[in-house]
Length: 591
Image 1 (cartoon, one colour):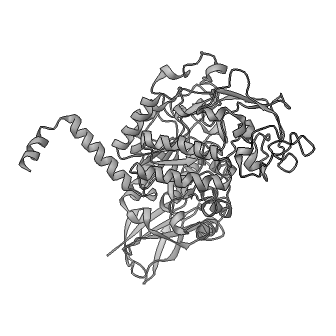
Image 2 (cartoon, rainbow, N blue to C red; image 1 turned 135 degrees about the horizontal axis):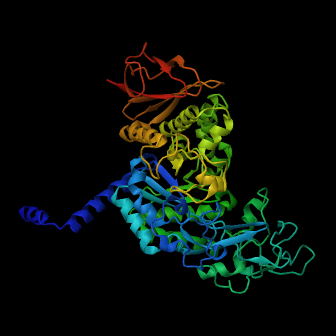
Image 3 (cartoon, helix red, strand yellow; image 1 turned 45 degrees about the vertical axis):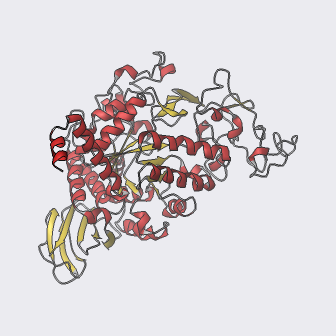
């Protein structure tokens, strides 16, 4: 022991730093998904740490490289080095996990119909094994993960198994828009329809060795020069795609159709299943990723997920990652729809779109608070009930639908900045103190609101050259880039601090205490395993609310964690509360 002490005294800084990083990694591996606060960002719009990769190594032509910082739908220069440089900013907000929009190599520019845009968002993948050169390289990716882990922060990747970039074309529709052709009208065993020549003899939907010709619905081909555009190589063969034309997002086309022209993978095919397991398992092996958000989950057949998800969990466990967080995108406000993916498809969790709808509507004053009570009542329909509900990432807006600030402004067109700010704070409080994993959308903390979804909700964090971004006045006023003094940054940081300090707010059983059919009081308790109780109270109306709220019988004395809480209950199981307009309180029972 004396020798060990002597050696430790002469440890080099590098050795000490390595040991500290290993300790941080060991500690974060033990955290459960519900312990996290996730920060979701698009690398292209978050921070430009290396201007030399702005064009991604392509010719300096916007239609070649996709770089045009004045256009909402083109690359703006953000990258992984920038994210690494701004980890202090993210951690200061209280986020403990960074969710990156897809970082894989994309087709830089695509056109579909009358639209032309660039893959700044990351969802038009060609090489599933490499980092997109606009964002950096393998070294930049590794540096980001290691820097995050050294701080005790997790890194989640956004992955795509439903489709690739749009490379495959159909000879029948050279203009590029091809109507969906169904399995009944265009069966796999006839060329070009039920009256066509027999092909793929003996194919029954299960033995894919008999599916050898892909021209059952359309005649797919790969344009000259793009024969090897995709990696791994098996992705270049049209036989591994559905090739049925554009999805209408209804019926079978929701599974088998091309998503806005993107090549829809034949995810029933064992080659595709194993190929995707190998691809994304490789990212876990190489970088020690801590979780996956899975894009377009509802557009892939359940059998694929039933094989893929257990394989990813096993791969993570083999890497020493016991709490690998997987959550799918099921874009629907109905919990009956989202819950199905935990019961049938085998998802451990899904993004909580139903919460997003109810929380933003309540905070905006559009509806009563009873919608939240009904939402939480539906937690029982998820597989494992409340246990699964506890790890659903809850959120208020995103890069597709738009920001919470936009929703609040849209519902309150005559509200002044102070009211809009208060309602956005209230929405974040509803998310931060209720069950689930709070998921922040980058830039909300700076007051970005935007004018809608997609390009209107993907602002640059730095002074922008895009007119619609540069001309926006953020909620709470314009601040310097990455300001930690922005009103919403400060408000969210206060919430995350309270949540981090109180285990019951992360892991406690949730009990809804009060609600109504009009804007006003919403109350819930988080009850810890030791019986401790934290009461969170929210007022979505513009006048104060006062009420008696039921609590645990043993909760007689209270400490204010935020706001003005009554020091004692009025009687066993009842406490008097008074909540200011558009505000919230957090009260903790004490012995």
